Image 1 (cartoon, helix red, strand yellow):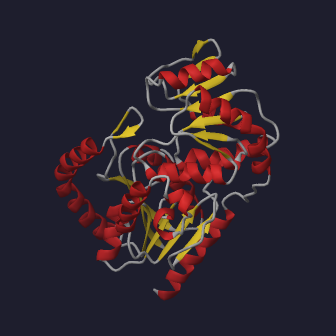
Image 2: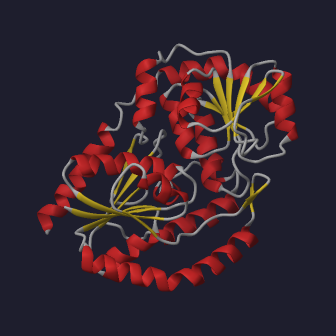
Image 3: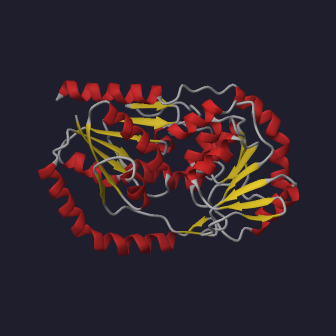
Length: 361
């Protein structure tokens, strides 16, 4: 089939997960063209064919918080300038490709194209969890206003798709039809790391991923822990490791990061779904401190704690880190029961949906 695949560019998680699905689709013989924005374009262009850049919405962060005013203004400026290019890109795409189905990882332009041309649209992401599942009061009440805003946004983002394939490590009750839940999408590098590292074998170090600079409370808490901490993201632009006592600030390398993750005793990070789901898959307890103003990250962190796989903390200070470290053995026991057969379930579900669409063409 001819498939138009859209990937939202906010954060790298969508691109990393989409790459796995795109490789599967290509291996199945489908002709796939990709529309992506921001950093997702550069990442995907190095790994799959037929990737086209398009403007997408982005979020402005400052000191681990979402800055809504700056985000709105930045998107208005960039979006207004980009509109003519979007229209030209789509006319060119229609003449060149003529897709039979659209798959969107929370990306709007491909969705609109599919609806405009009455082409079946499939959604693959984790964020639809907010709108299409029922959540217990203790989850919603953690930030009810944030939940309502997030649900309204998610509901309006990709309405009335033919089917929603939601990836997740927790399984609440569905509240919408045409929806199915699947285990998280796992990169081949993470699959290989799991195969090469016993789930019961962990080192003594903490893996820390924090992109907000100047977090003195976190740095002090890590130093006071006495544990070796391999830290990514807190010192952007460094080209070699900087060691300060038990703290090792490391330049980003995907290979080294995955190796440190696979051998870590535990992980300290925000609430992004990709890293969190990789921690669950690799059986690594996680202390999650979501970006303020990002309900989807809060949702992930609350369910992580609810499942017993880690702990949620609004901020990571000495008390929060100490409490988490005390819980690591119990989290390891809970994680030991988690099983997932790679990406087989998601791929089977996607292939079934494509077969249904093909039969109706």
